[in-house]
Length: 521
Length: 110
Image 1 (cartoon, chains in turn green, red):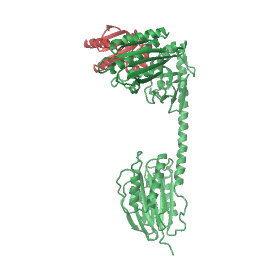
Image 2 (cartoon, helix red, strand yellow):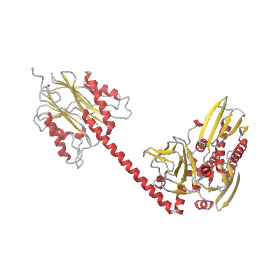
Image 3 (cartoon, one colour):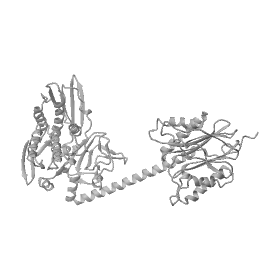
Image 4 (cartoon, helix red, strand yellow):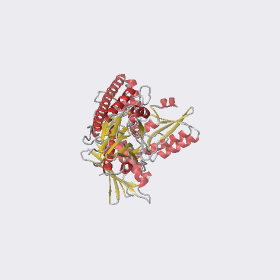
């Protein structure tokens, strides 16, 4: 097995490369292939010369191993220097311009790109780097005898193309990168993740970036298997266009075809998302109690609620439940954001609130405890506003706390609604320390509490006017002690009339609780 | 490696024949520094007879490019082929430098 051993000094490089050139010629490799291999060996040897022996002289041994059937060439580079594995060096930044570009890592990049495999082992105090070159068919060695023809029928003259190899997992380019060349896949396969498309041998990619007015990649390309590609630069493509207008036409034709395919895939994906949102909305609505009257045997109060989701899944919710056989809890909330994440967060909030309320804590404590639970895992920065009340059905005493929610209205006698007393408080999920005090109010039989979300007060008409809390208050005050369901229906109708056709941008929630007095014995 | 240079008006055409590797690249650096010291700032590198370039050679080009950039000069690289062209493509250097198909075309750019 041919080998050569020389001191690890720059002066030895010429001899190492001559060794490689001579062995390559003996093996029948083309001059071009020989130079590629010399380049790889130079980078590996120079790396050893620079780094392996910091404290003194040392040697490098090069071994040339060609399989008997000529299918594989392994060149081993061995040194007895400090432990070093070339493969651990990170990829250089190949996209930076002249001002920012550094040379570091480029040599190793060549080694990775121009070899089919790189192995490293440390044995008996020596680093052994093995550079593996798979021998390809004679045709691939010298290149196709004629032009390279893609599956779509485009032909490129071989002389304009550069052979490049990539390993499984390598990224050829990322969406947004500057498009500088097209790739014809000779061997292997790659995937375009944004499009969910796989391109195999015979395929051509990267043409759209070159022809696009923005000169940027429309998708990324990742190797699924080790890849052999022939690339042609944008400038060469343009030159070819001048020589061969039929090719130009074919390429544009292909690009338009691809563009339409991508558009169709995008539209389908969008429709899929829309139907997911519809499902999320249905699930969200189903989570809220919708059977009325909810507690038919409880004559102490009447309760009605309504939640109409806007087109996209919003985050409104409400809930009511008996904490024990005397006390009723009613709450309304609004989660920030839209879509499926908001719906999921809403489900969590609703559950947390019920859990803490059922444990018997007073309203402000409930909100504080829920807030403390939401804070640590809140990476997505979602917030929720909540208003929560607990009514003692025996005494009419109502205790409540507000966490940043629109201030509810309460009637003190028929036809007179006012905003409930007490601070608006802090929204939950944002900061560790929330200030939500518990306020107490004695309800008299006939008193009604009206909770609502900002989808009501912020409902807009065509003139960009808001419905507003004041209009809501005034509208409710026009009644004469009606039952919660009539009250809510009237209020809902008022908002609909006001909006006059403008679709709601946010969920609309209304909850009305009327106290009738203690249970009759 | 053999380096020749000739002036064309205010431009300098530097022809590099043979190989630019870790051993010969420093000679290229020295030659370019001499030309820069003469006050020349418009460089055309004729690589039509360059058979081989490694990362050491690319480093020399990068250094030259940055030095010229500071002087608001220009650098065009002409006629890369075969392995040299492959190296430029793989490393992305074909995108950082102004490239031309021939020295004539390069002269037209500067």
